[in-house]
Length: 367
Image 1 (cartoon, one colour):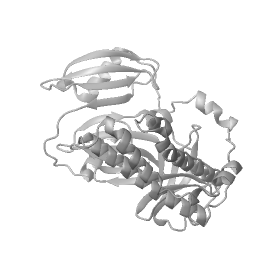
Image 2 (cartoon, helix red, strand yellow; image 1 turned 45 degrees about the vertical axis):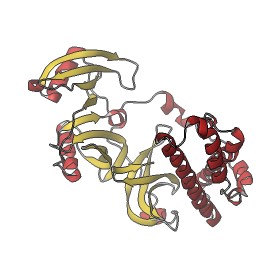
Image 3 (cartoon, one colour; image 1 turned 60 degrees about the vertical axis):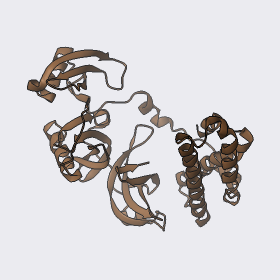
Image 4 (cartoon, one colour; image 1 turned 180 degrees about the horizontal axis):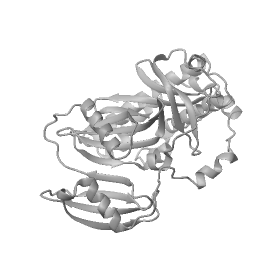
């Protein structure tokens, strides 16, 4: 994907060759290391040093791209000039990339190059169950009444239909709600099965913030409880233009259920809930019979990068690409000033996933 974007730039391909090669090698090297984890092999000190070096090179390359973007946006470089100046910038940048990081890449990659396909999980890819979508089918008139109850009938001037989304992830009635004395209308989608609110959004300007993030979070949890979504725990959030968007996950017996996600959009002037999105929850929610924890927290922590400074640990259920779920130990920690979440399988001790936590001025996100 990155290679295709690079090829569209008006820069001679010879100047981008090393950049493209670098990106491809990073991808291949990362893939080879992931194969090691699958086969329960620990990363060597050399592997960890290579990853650190590659991260530094990636940051440098990102800075070059950001500078080129800034130069273009501010008129210092035109598309015509990019052919010359851009080529020089890329040529200088990629010359700094060390070839030593890839000295053993080809041998390692061939060793772990086989793609693994687990046929036992294929049914989950083609026949996803919507476990939280309960109840009998409703018609459009009933959906309109649910919309009135959600917004408050006294606030509504008119409700019109935008049609029925039959082929969506969750078949639903899409409605437009015109509010009294308000130029901004609201949209809402209500599932045909059970009459669940799948999505709703209302936009308005926020002039002055009077609600803190913590207060908004409490408002959000109370709102979800009132709407039939109890035991929700905040995970990550984003704050933009006076609006706090919070991701909540269901909590069962102290264990975070990441498949059961709900997103809320809360105004920080008066705490009004402006939006909700429940697709993850409606697709996945159920009371789970969890397998026993066979790997203790202490045993799981032994598999972590020895440079990871652990800040917290807890149990969590995470989804997989095969629509299955895994009970894991979730470790939050930092390495070289960057925060990570590492998930270690609580049944067999394997590393299942690593997420980079982005703690930005606007919120806490993951990658």
